[in-house]
Amino acid sequence: MRRRWRRLASRYPCSWMEKAGRDLRLAELAAGEGFGEEAAFHAQQAAEKSLKALITAHGDRPPKTHDIDVLLARLERLGVEVGEEWREEASALTAYGVEARYPGPPINMEEAERAIDTARAVLEWVKEKLRELGVEC
Image 1 (cartoon, rainbow, N blue to C red):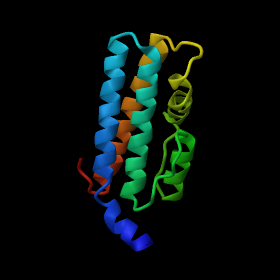
Image 2 (cartoon, rainbow, N blue to C red):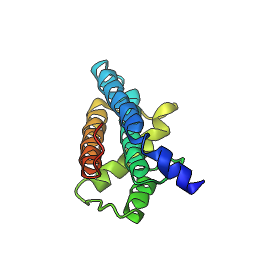
Image 3 (cartoon, one colour):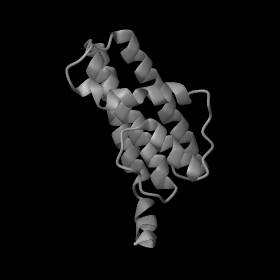
Image 4 (cartoon, one colour):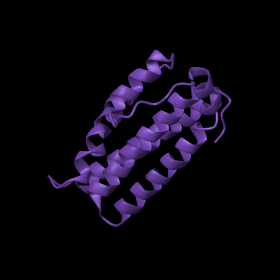
């Protein structure tokens, strides 16, 4: 089963990245309309899905989680060096994966824009790591 997964996994990183790109675009559109919660949610989803693309590119199954720290830890176990320069900001996106979908304190546009910028940085980092593996999406 593990071998079969590795063979199939080579097809999935770009599918994950396509979904991540769509979520980033949805975050930008939501922000443009003043929907902070929705923008933050889709920013988190973009970062999450891009990290799952990189996990998949390494031949591993991505865990079913919205927790960015869990995904980064999995990448480190796979031998990917995760820089500290954006880790804290990326980690902060985790809260938007669930909390932003339900009633609660509003997410202001400054916070939403920061989430989008962070997601964009995560996607760019993942694209670079995928290129290093010979995966072009």
